[in-house]
Amino acid sequence: VSLASSSVIAGVVAALCGIGGGMILGPILLELGVAPQVQGACMAATLFVTSTTTALFFVVQGVAPLGLALFLGASTGVGAIFGVSAMAVAIQRSGRPSFVVFVLAGVIGVSLLVMAVKGGIDVADGLAQGDPMGFRPLCR
Image 1 (cartoon, rainbow, N blue to C red):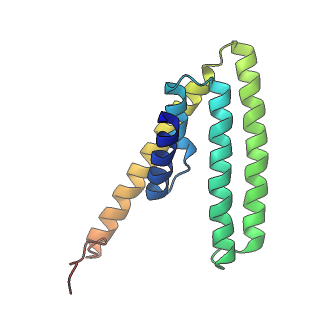
Image 2: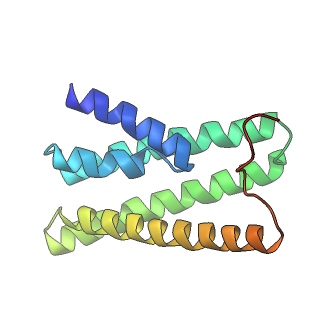
């Protein structure tokens, strides 16, 4: 029950924040005692589904050119294969599957920092331009 409810919460938070659900579900799986390699695979699958459906949505809506979407998709696939291979080598050399946890923590930390900085810059730009940043009266 806790995994199902955690998954629903992860999906809602991921949709609200615009990030992949794996970024939220990953630490929850580790807390539930799932092996780091299994957690990493689940996180990768979740991020793949989220990013693929988002990309398809943008292509169908005509916002993203198909050629660029295919190029970025292929680049991401190559990067994923490289990342999985590098992680396997790092785990084999260190003999510690917990290496996955440290990489996950680093990725989440960097993501948090980038989102905070980007959000701050957007707020500062909005204030400088006199934009109410979405806060408008409910009744007009």
